[in-house]
Length: 310
Image 1: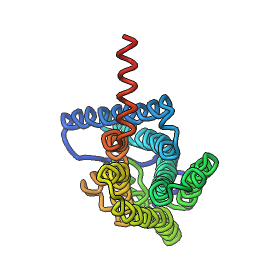
Image 2: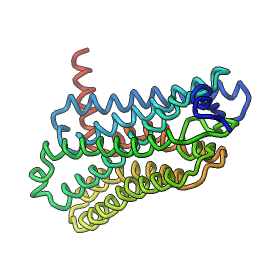
Image 3: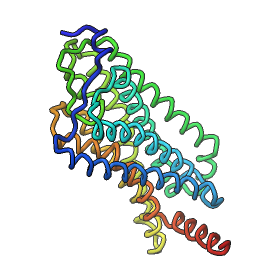
């Protein structure tokens, strides 16, 4: 059994994707490409929304915050993954591991509440259009965003601080590309009842607590859309909402499912983790760009202005 001081000095060894060095180089290329596309896509959406005054609405205010979460989430994961694939140094310090877990909980929880706020925004716009601007005021949108961040911080601290009480048994091998809570808990020699209760409570409150309001909102939205008489009105409403449904499905189903299952160190677990931590942040801006008519119009206007200048 190793002491806390030994754990802090040695840290953990990350062992992802058992394969040859040539395959590692290929994976590095793929992950770096995904990372830069994620940065470019999300920053592009943020710039488009900033430059087009027609997009200065609650929906796009939340979309900017979602893009920020996606950039930070990908930045927490990809640089360390690339490092351990490229170099022989596959260690991560105990403090670095805690930081990665804490940031993951903060970003994932904040993004969950922002997605929930976006669902409420769509519900208000489609089901109560006459009162929409009064309900979704700028002040209320800022309140929802700040509340999402504060709840994200609370989720992070509640799950990360109890990890400081744990002792860890050797070998300190994590068969994963990052420090995640399920993998870290399997290495502990300490009773994990408190940690598991906090983790389960967080998943229930953040995961299901956000998912069910979203399901309720979209049930009402679909019901309202079906009552629209014009085909173009139905098409526009479905186009706006379907992008949100896709993002929510990708994020919640893979994320909550992964943390509810015990860690086994399998390749499948790493693939599932890649889905919600690396792939989803890449897909978000493209889903919104391709499915949203107003964003496509804003991109077209921006391109036309650029063509006139040159």
